Length: 207
Image (cartoon, rainbow, N blue to C red; front, side, top):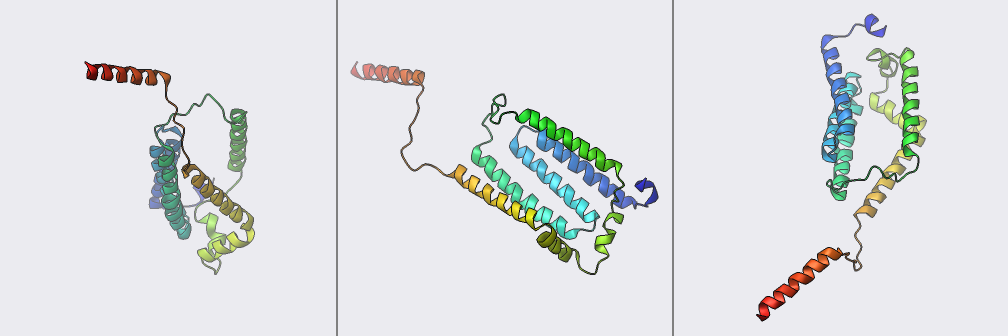
């Protein structure tokens, strides 16, 4: 096994275990907590833990981007949308807005588990050994990352930009308020109670 053949320093092992456990706990909290604000805070913990793992892999720039962009800007955007839509509104989960979404979710989960099992059976080098080929080059980590983003992974990078633009447009649509007159729907029982209260007030003033 890779763990038995590659010596690992005790501080690195402790840091990895701490960050890995914190990332898993944060990811579980994002899914299990009912309060959306608490879920967003658990997401911050997960992102910080992943940034620590990036530092352990000698990818300091990715760690900085993880903290500045994701833990900073993206989570703030999530909190903005949560506060905009309201956290006290209850959703009816029994009514599916998308047909057959639960069977599709089960199929996606099974495929993800199969992919993880296939990856676990292969010999993947991790830690310092896994990044030796990329860090031994003369170019810095930032130069290599920029070259990979704008050459090999240019299409996914542009697709991500398009998704961010769509998210901004969706936020604007949700936040926009109608400028025309709004129709107020009054409950009939509330209207009857108000009418009775007005009658009693008028009778009291006449007497």
